[in-house]
Amino acid sequence: MERMLEMEKTLQELATLLKGEILQGDPGMVLKGVNGLEEAQNDQISFAVPPYLEVAGQSRAGAIMIPRGAQFKGQQAVLAVENPRAAFAVLLQLFRPPEAVKKGISQYAFIHPSAKVGKNVAILPFAYVAEDAEIGDNTVIYPHVYVGRHVKIGSDCTLYSNVTVREDCIVGDRVILQAGCVIGGGGGGDQHPHPKNTTKTPTRDGGPGGGGGKGVETNIHPGTPGRARGGAWGTNQQLGTV
Image (cartoon, rainbow, N blue to C red; front, side):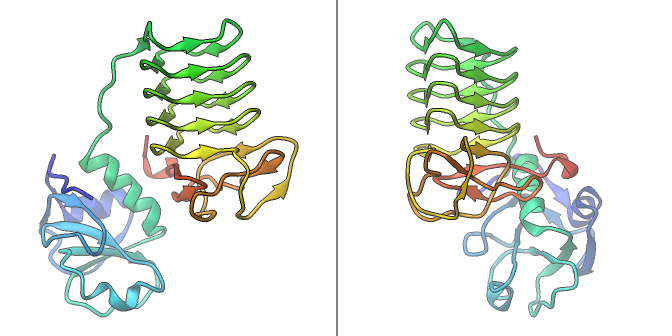
């Protein structure tokens, strides 16, 4: 993960934003980004949850977010929050806001006449939106994305290049599908009978390269960022993530 240096925030400012508690460290220390435990530097903040709490003290991060009530052995500044994964998602948005994309539908994208496209949507070249698909307001669809028949994409979503959303899937609001992921393309993982595939906002990893098979519900719980099959990411709205 590359370093994110768009702004500077003190540990106290982050604690206020995340409604967290500083357990150790200088509240005035300046942090310039957010990163993983292995990649973080002393001017960045990271997070740790079990079982990684035991090794988090070896990180070079200047500050580490941990769950409330957890034990931590290390010299870094420590910020206790309710949900470190959700807090990490918030800080990703804070230190590196999404790239601005010009709204509109490219002349090189294919949109079936029966598809419904919301307001302020960006659909970039070579995207394909099949019949009876629905795209919610403020959603961005990057090049070479395939949206199948009867798919419903919610509002404020981002589908990066080469994403495939197969027929009859439903993607909720504020979901990010990372490049190359496949939603609804037959595969293993934790699946439950359901008449349609339902991708809400996010879940734990369902397994490498897996897809929620047709006729399966992908259980993705609101407010808990994580990766759905193939890399679907969502965010915690209570913490102000877009």
